[in-house]
Length: 82
Image (cartoon, rainbow, N blue to C red; front, side, top):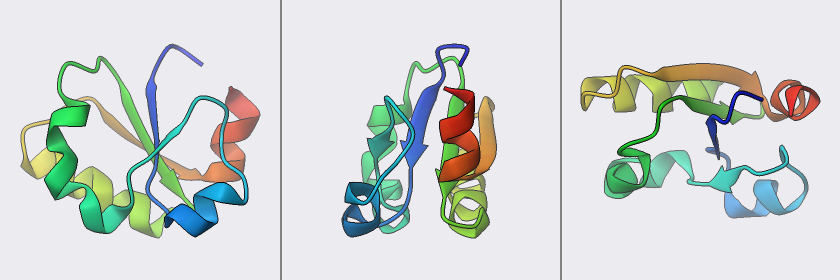
């Protein structure tokens, strides 16, 4: 809701079934190859079905120098906030 970069790390098939408004789909297994998409973002919110994959994505991003990452948990929780 604060202009965050919303990233759904579920599979493309899961993403197509519904996601938070304005979110982009960067599946967990492609986060490392897509680090450039996260550069320059003031606040990054990653989320998935249960919060597990988004937790892994948060760890990957933080280990690559990103300090502004929040695990939003489930896509439904994030959808309610935007």
